[in-house]
Length: 211
Image: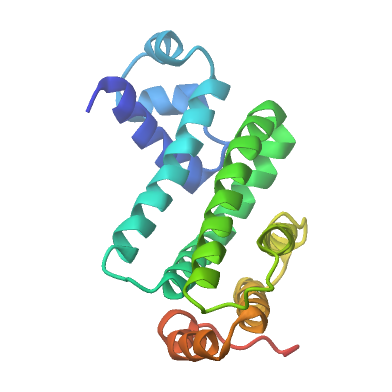
C-alpha cells in the first residue's frame, strides 16, 4: 500500500466516524504522524481528499457485497442481500451525504453523478436477470422500476428528518417498503424466494408500527 492509499484509508475512517466537517487536514496529519504540507502535496486540498475517501468508503461496501454474494447463484437473493447490506449502512451514508451537500456541495455533486449511475446500473442488471430467470413478471418495465425504487429509497435517506427519527423505525420502513414493492413484481416462483429469504436477511428488523 502506497502512502497515498494509506492516507485515504485512514482518513476515510476518520470522516465516517467523526464527520466530514469536523475532521480537518491538521487532524488527519496529526493522526497519521505526517506533515500537513505532505497532505497538500499529495491531494491538493481537503475536497479532493474527501472525494477520494468517500469513493473508498463506497468501493469498500461494493467489495463487501461482492464477497457476500460470491456463493449465491440466485439473482433475486443476490438483490435482496445487496439491499440489506446497503440498508445496514444507510444511517452513516445518509449523514455523510447530507453534510457533504451542506458543506462541500462540489464534492457532493461530483459523487452523486457517479454513484447514482452505478446504483441504477446495478438495479437494472439485477432486475433484468430476475425477469430472465422467471422470478419477476416479463411485463415489468425495468427502467420505470429502477427509477421508482431508487428515488423512493433515496428520498427517505436524504430526508432532513432522518437523523431525528427513531433509527430502527426508519430502517424498518425502508426495508419493508423495498420488500413489499419487489414482492409485487414477482411471479409465484419469485414470491417463494422472497418469503424464504426474508427472515434470513430482514428477520432481525422489527416490523414498523405503521404496517
